[in-house]
Image (cartoon, rainbow, N blue to C red):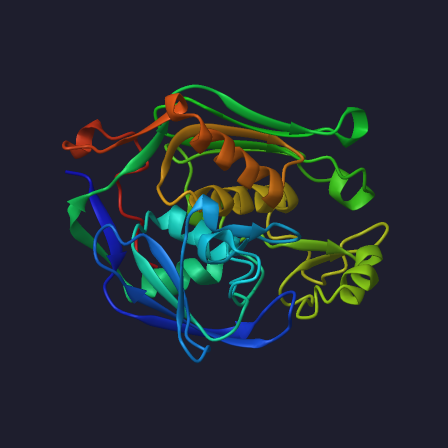
Length: 311
């Protein structure tokens, strides 16, 4: 049987939120089989649990934000996508995430620090079958036309792969890779994707800060780009770090569905909002998906059965 996974022990991190700039403590704890990933706002007088699922998404401006039942007036947890991406990359099914503020800490702007935290706690197999959401027919969402067109698509695939194309029309971004495909069967999430950082343009910073966003951003946790070049002294971690970060985000956004996917994802200029619309469109069509388990580990698609190696 291909088994569910949780942590062996708890682990903690302290940082600041990218958008709110608040100090925040994060405690990651083991959870029983079939719990899923559950955020807990432990800073509130009465702690509030926020289960991770597509219907919990209540805001997608600049990040993925969750609240109980997707209620925009309820307690929230913001910027969950990098931690969710790390959980998907390591195949973690069940986890309690205790958080002392509204926003997950940005740490270094990638999923790499979360991967390190999770692996340092150890990964434990549980006596319950891992449940995959298998896509059975293509589902697509599109927005805009011409130069403003963006789209995202899920198709049947015996495994999990993602292809993304960006189009920023910016000298610094145009010099790097514009398209990337990552297949869990042949790639290594930790090596190929996890270290890609979020990025921002100096021309947008003033506008974002006037809206109370980006208050915790710096060159320590983001790639910063002016009108012509990358300003970070150390440069890029990957030649195609911009598009790889969009893949990292997509892995996290799609894992909000609550189960690992068996699917091929393709997207052009997609983001948090379109990724969530894609999940909701998939779930709305009962003929487009089912839930499967693998009694024989050897029958599972390559790349989804192996435990990620420890650091």
